[in-house]
Image (cartoon, rainbow, N blue to C red; front, side, top):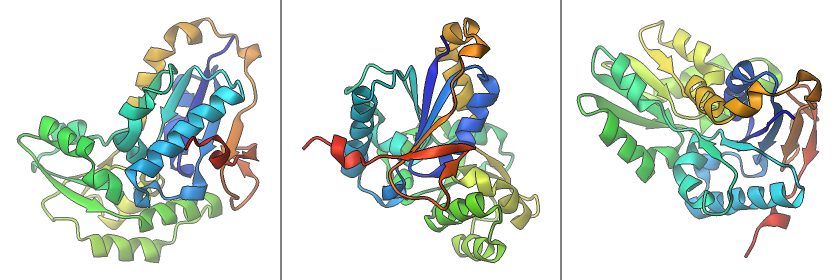
Length: 264
C-alpha cells in the first residue's frame, strides 16, 4: 500500500514544497490542506497557529485519513508550533524552516538576507537558526505579507503583477551587500523568477523545497520502496475558505471548517 503524505500550508505556498516531494516520491498518495481562512499565517498569533494545527490533527484523526507523514509546508507555522504539535500526535511531522545554513555557505560577500513573514522573522526558532548557522555571515532581516498576496494572485491567475512586485521590493530596500536571498516563506518561490529578474541576477535566491523533499523521502523510504503504482489514489485537496476556483493541482477542493475540531 502506498504511503499517505499530507502537505499543509495557510495557502497555495505549500504547493512549491509539494512539487519537490512529488518528484522524489511519485508513487505516494497525497493530500493538500490549506487553512486559507486565516491566510496569511504571518499575521496570526502563535497561539492561534498552534490551535489551528492541533485542530488539523484532530480532523485527520476523526476522518481516519491514515496520514503517514505530515509536512507543515509553512515557515511561519513550523517556526511557531512544531514542538507543541508533536506532543499531540504520533504522526511523523516534517517542518519547513528558512535555508539560512546553505545560504551562508553559498555567500561570497558574507551578507545574506532572510525574506519572510513578520511572524517568522521574530520567532525564537529563526533567531536560534541564525545564531547557529551564520557565525561568519551577517543576516539582514526583511518581512512582507504583500508578497504572499501577490504569490496567491499569481498562482491562480497565472500572471504576476510586476508593478506591485517591483514596488514592494523597492520598499524593502535589500542591503546592496547581500548576494543570497533566503525565501523564508513557501509562497515566495512562486515569485522567484520575477524576484531574480528585478535584481538582474545580482542576488541569488534559495529556498528549502528540495531539502524538505529529501527529509520526507528518508522517512518514507521503506513504504515507497514497496509501493505499487496501481494503489495510488487521486490527490485530495482541502481548504477552510473558498478559492478563486474549485480546483487545486487538478483536483476538486473539499471545504473544511476547522473550528469544528478546535478544542477549547
